[in-house]
Amino acid sequence: SQQGEEDPQALSIQEGENATMNCSYKTSINNLQWYRQNSGRGLVHLILIRSNEREKHSGRLRVTLDTSKKSSSLLITASRAADTASYFCATAAGYNAGNMLTFGGGTRLMVKP
Amino acid sequence: SAVISQKPSRDICQRGTSLTIQCQVDSQVTMMFWYRQQPGQSLTLIATANQGSEATYESGFVIDKFPISRPNLTFSTLTVSNMSPEDSSIYLCSVAGTAVAKNIQYFGAGTRLSVL
View (cartoon, each protein chain N blue to C red):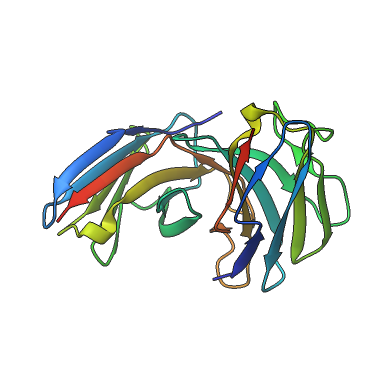
């Protein structure tokens, strides 16, 4: 079953605006990852944040993690039409190679030009 | 990163038939996974494909319906057996445990299956 719940389920913004997506989970984790999926295709890994980290940046992406609240957020700054996709958070309980990921329900982001 | 080739990319099948999906990776990986994604939904793990032994299935998925093979460290197949319209989904393979990034999963482009 899914561990993560994401909100909002859908988000529509104008190009240039920032987009914030939230993810909550239920059990202890080793790391949390964010993935992007374009039009029902394969998922692309965006960023990984470990349980002992609070914030991480990658280009226009900023991820925060609050383990006390069991929640994470993904911020995309200065959004572009090409950012239109579904975004999923995924949690990993361990740190061994191939630890299973449990995916959240996803946020469908639409960026209007 | 790993490059994953998944075939076929899409298929339309008749009820009662079976479809085998192939997943080929360009390098040896520790783990391979198969997911199902129903329309508008998130990913649900079907099973972990184990090299040289039987796959490990998640609750709700059984070997008779979704037989999986993994003959080596770069290749796996998933068969969807005796299909019904409820099996219409996107099926995704992923890999983990690459030399570069052990904790990240890399996904194939998916197989979009429609069952009539």
